[in-house]
Image 1: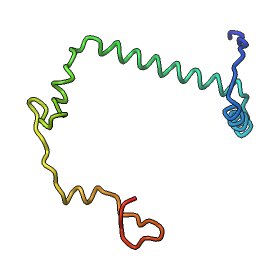
Image 2: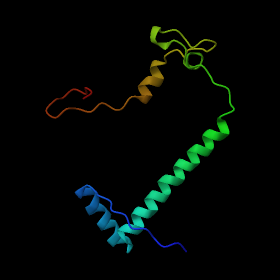
Image 3: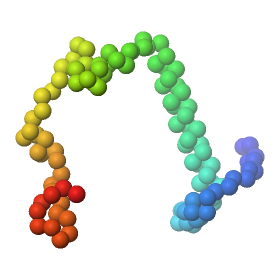
Image 4: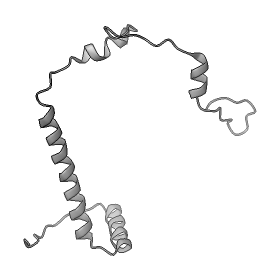
Length: 108
């Protein structure tokens, strides 16, 4: 096994307190927690790069073709629009929250 290398890392005081508490709660060293976090971050980067390499041969898709010109209210080219459904919108809206001291059910 390779010998470990020493490095100095500076933490924000709040983060350092949280890290110390986590180390104590899990009976691990701060060095162990930081090493694990760095390995995880590097592993995720490697996964992202591999996914990018796999997709590099895919054709580019024009953004405008995907979303269309929605700023002028027109539907995407080749697409369709979904008409508004007031009954469904009412289901999706949150319940009115009365403000303190008010009797009406107005939204905040």
